Length: 251
Ligand code: PGA
Image 1: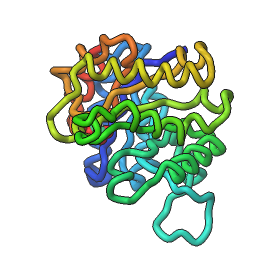
Image 2: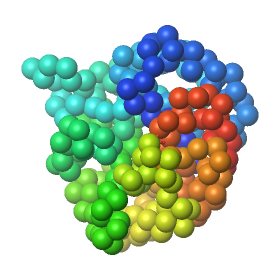
Image 3: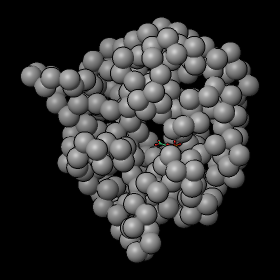
Image 4: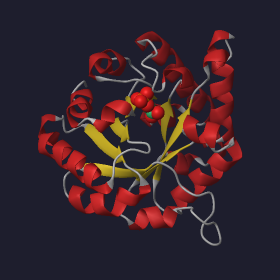
């Protein structure tokens, strides 16, 4: 079944203690959130094991923000899917535009990361989205189609069950500019149609597609009301427990 999901991407923010305080504040208020909303937190790698203990039995899930594109070995500084799994995390964010931009992640690398996550029983949250230039030149559908075709459409129908897609127009990330509910709906419906054409209607129907990019308490309701918007990948606003909870209550 298609899930409503609100995921907080903390990016490179918080010390371990700050992260614990933030999680405690979220746990305190988690009962305000509807049972049919899946809440996920993606802190830095260093926090995963510690926060996993705090979150045990709370109904909140844990995600890494990235994962290595190799299984193990001489890759100094990298963190593998099996390591992430061993912390108690259930998800990985893959292909975030900041990874594509600052760390040269290509669609090929992103596909490796998806496959390794799946092999290690982690559900990938796969990001896609166009630059401002792409949108202004009316290339946004073409760009997103290519990102989807080169990543999640290269895996099997069975494996696809675990995939979550996050549409994050790059021009809206951390800029305060949000895609309008209509722009988000239009792209989400397009992504769902790509999945339907490649697999089938059932797979497309069951896929959760999250919106990301300056999502906040004041705009979450309008965005989540759209038929093909199944939740959000929240950056800045996920660092404030109240805002994060308010967004999750917007369903
Ligand atoms: P933002 O970030 O909510 O701060 O725009 C979203 C994201 O990058 O996942």
